[in-house]
Amino acid sequence: RSTLDRSSAASDVYKRQRFLPLICISMLLAQAACSPIGLAVGAGASVVRASQTERGLKGSAEDLQTRAEVLHYLFQKDVDLFSAVSVSVTQGRVLLTGKVKGPKDRIEATKLAWKATGVAEVINELQVIDRSSIADHAKDILINKSLQARLLVDQEIKFINYTVDTVNGTVYLFGIAQNQEELERVIAVVRQTNYVENIVNYVTIK
Image 1 (cartoon, helix red, strand yellow):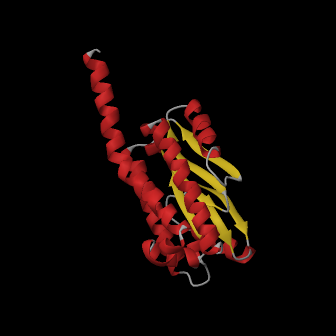
Image 2 (cartoon, rainbow, N blue to C red):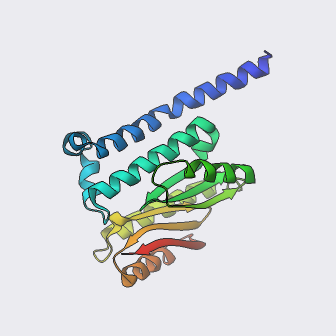
Image 3 (cartoon, rainbow, N blue to C red):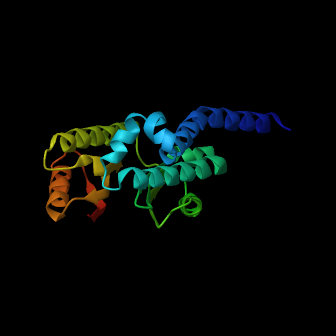
């Protein structure tokens, strides 16, 4: 093997070791949520949060299991792909967001997501080619934090049922709204947030 090959292999091993704890935690949480004992003891605060969502404990456990499987398949296929893709799951609907190197990566991520148990739909919003700078990435983080804070304190919004993700100024909304009025209120908050360029809504009405 050439020095370049050995260097590449060592880099891949390092990346896998770096992300392995996240995969293990995701799988353990999924197993705990699906286990009667885990529900009572192992899952802790995560179970309390799950019980408050529209899906309840069973539905949340199923979504958690699906997400863990998708992450596992991404990790096994390509560590770089795993680190580039964000996965959200609600009612068996899988939302993929993030930035990947090429069209083949978008297709591969979709195929891997469909392999997971309980997947009813895969929504691929992965953007090809990372055109963002460090400043753009920081701006996305700022948008996300600001939105989460504003939605959390709004008494007319059940924020626990929503997932918010921001990529290159585009905000992706995912989850379950109590009614149309609540959804419109959420969208209004997003529109009033600084630096938001676009809104993609995948929220379903209860």
